Image (cartoon, rainbow, N blue to C red):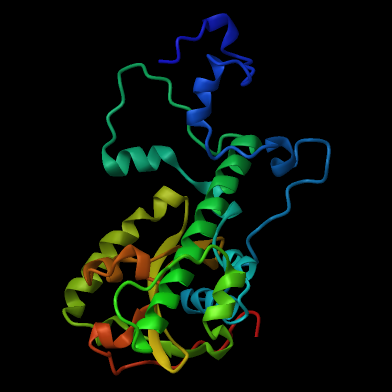
Length: 279
């Protein structure tokens, strides 16, 4: 595909024109991968994720605590990062999706060594950072429209520092947990959540579970749709959005900031978690 000579394929320099073709396949590779992975003679790569918590609701609450503090790093730490890289199972993914592999094809499954695990964790971290900022931008749009702004609000926020200047994040308050029963067609949504839970082996996890937390920001109530994942008896956030938000047709860009009125304002909000990490 890249027309490389076999005897030269083991070690490549990326400063020649022909070899730069490989760069398109390495867009997410950090400038100094050994330093990021802790293999460059420096200290081992510091873990991004915080210690897991006792329930999915606590994991979602930890994300909201970071949102209130406008601390993107704290929000990121509520997700599985290293646990994801250490346990992700591509073979299970291939079986789940019925991936077709050519006969005799040599497939290198991720997580087979420390380097691969750390590289997966690094890619996971960068992907989550983009998703988290995207949800912050969605919250900004919602606050603008709730204040009476018309369509066409510019959404040019590129950092959490900019977001903090435009949204009163300090006003964020966790209201509680919205149970599945509060949504229309709850039986159907429970079935979808159960089927979605079958993906836990893909992550090498014990269990996944959808969670919907209600919170308030600037006097407007929102829903945060989160999927939690369980490793070694501890819960972490797995992704923003879950089977419930997908069943409701929520845009991926707004799964972390859905005004409750858009959802028909579900009246049943259970008490917030007894333990909120970081509070």
